[in-house]
Amino acid sequence: GAGSILVQLVLDELEAHDSKYEFVVLQATENAIPFYEHKGFVRVGAMARYRDLDPEHLERIQQRELEELRREDRVKMMAILDAVSSATRTNSKGQPVHIVEPFLFLPSKQDLPEYFQVVKQPLSLSEVRETVEKSGYESMAAFEAHLKLIVNNAKRFNAVGSRLYLDAEAIEKLAAKMLDKVSLVGDALTEVAEMQAESPAAFWRTLQIGKVVDAKDTKRGHWHEAKVVQIDDELGRVKIHYQGWGRKWDEWYQKDSADLAPSGTHMGKKASVEAVLPADNDTLLQAQAFQVRPGCTVPVTATVDASSRRI
Image (cartoon, rainbow, N blue to C red; front, side, top):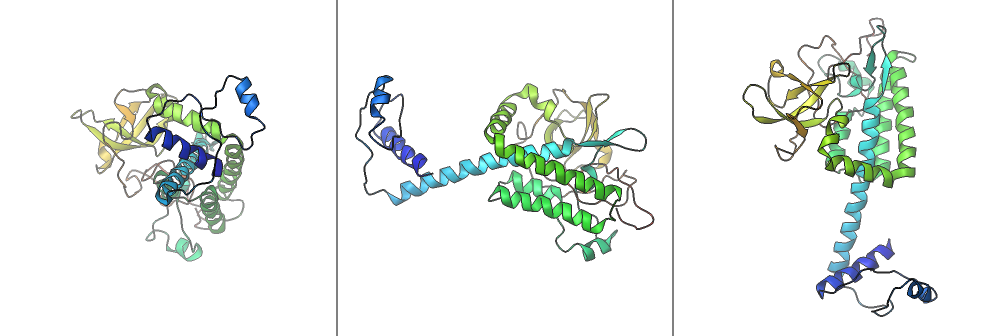
């Protein structure tokens, strides 16, 4: 707000004159000055005063404030998407499956043209994730609106009570719960996310389906941009797909392998990659849900409802 802008103006002025200081206190009235002096503070400058401000200087400060707010919101958005991507349920074989998988990408217009006749504003979580990655959301409200749109699209197209309808409801509840949580502990989430980003040892614990990573191929030992397409929790390994390569080159890595690294460690900025279904996937169609990283591809475990042709 205005207070942070005033403090930044003072800090900029101090730096411009090569000043040395330990603390800068923003005080609204003179009443509390004795309190700070009692604590050992020494007043070395005048009280805040009205003066003409450099419009360009003020604009730069406001822009920095806006970028900081967007950065904090982006961390919260990532936390929500990661939480949703981690949610599982037990399938008919008693195996855990990620409920997010069928919702990651839009169905093919060729395979399911009726989907686009029913759903007027199609949106996938790969698109949401990509927008978050590019800091494209102006606010948490805009991000939340897109999550609701994805859920509503899935519920509109799928039969009430169907597996995907129920999964969409579960995702909606989890997303709402996480939205409330990040509103209360946003600062804590930001701190944790920054610590994880700075800690290579914690990288493997953040691996999720769809996460973009740098991977060293076992054939030539070269680093490439890749994405996680499958996770085997029992064996502690992940399957990755190299961007731009055929799927026959997909490889398995242990989660803590030194040949996996955070995206951008060896390959610079992430490229925008079009999402396609794995060639070896037996599932023909997919609905919408939440995605983990932009341009990711994952095996879809949902099946087609033969009675309604809804997914």
